[in-house]
Image 1 (cartoon, rainbow, N blue to C red):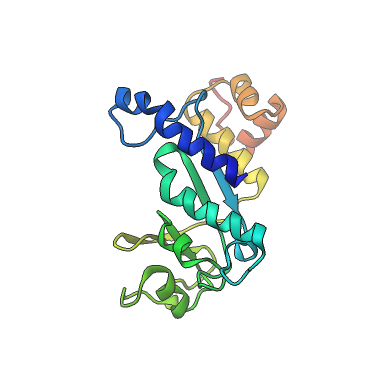
Image 2 (image 1 turned 45 degrees about the horizontal axis):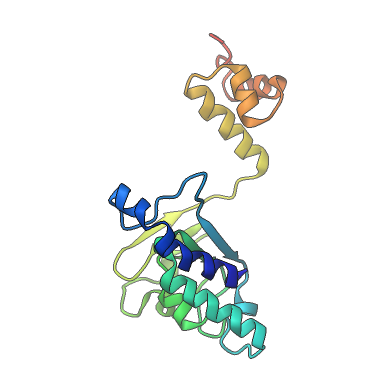
Length: 198
């Protein structure tokens, strides 16, 4: 996968240069015909740890570093998650080239220092509960809060958002891919008056 992603990125640098010129943009404009490619790696220690000496794993790690280095402008990107941001879990070059870093509750001060740099004035105490996070890179860092949503909550939110935009019950059902009955039930549970004026 990483070999193909690198080949695509290299090809896009020349084959699609005209799209950047036409859009007067530094980044390759993505579309349905020219989609972004995202390689997502969860629990990255197996692949990205520099202590892993397996030749195939090493090639994957080297390719991911090369993708980060050359392919972002061509809409070929890497997303990495790891339990910790330390060098035994993620190769230093991978961390260094990450455009955005997100640290969640559960890290200690040493992890935060390794991830964002020392003397930033941030502490693990600033992430008191689950869902608390720091988002950013070296110079721009903000505190954030996230919540876990279950599939039904996501469906309900999609229904309510479409209703707020004035879509009909049938259009909502088609857009969210649920029955009309599910839409009626969701709207009734959220706001008893939501179904008026269909």
